[in-house]
Amino acid sequence: MIDTERDVWVNTFSLISQVSSDPTPDLMDVSPDGKFVYAALRGPCPVSGNEPSVNNSVGATPGVGVIRVKQSGFRGEMIAVAPISNQVAPFVCTTVGGTPTVNELADIHTLKVVLK
Image (cartoon, rainbow, N blue to C red; front, side):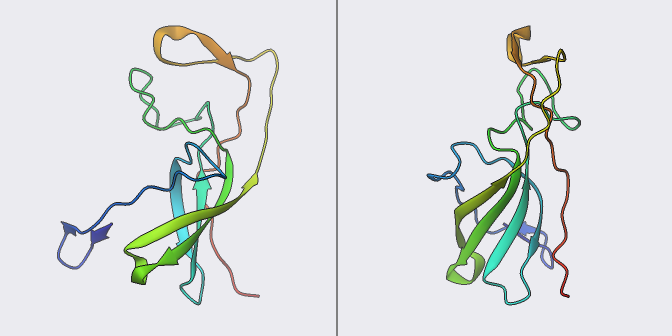
């Protein structure tokens, strides 16, 4: 968590839960009532932004994550994931060490909460 007015780090908390062992959020947006955050979650074969030597953008759960906001935003809990899939064959993604691993290309990069 960053205080953008003072440009300082404030807090960090884990989103690992029963719904995802490696949620890897990308961009997020807050619900109008401030009770939830919706996050674009990276998949096992990110289309961009990944440094293959460390797999900094690789996640286990491509989709939209729902995070319940706690303690005025100082804590949160991943409570659900709406999964997506984009399996492409014969394409195979490789990870650290160059080992072929998956053909799952789903990789949401952003989302926006819109009131209707």
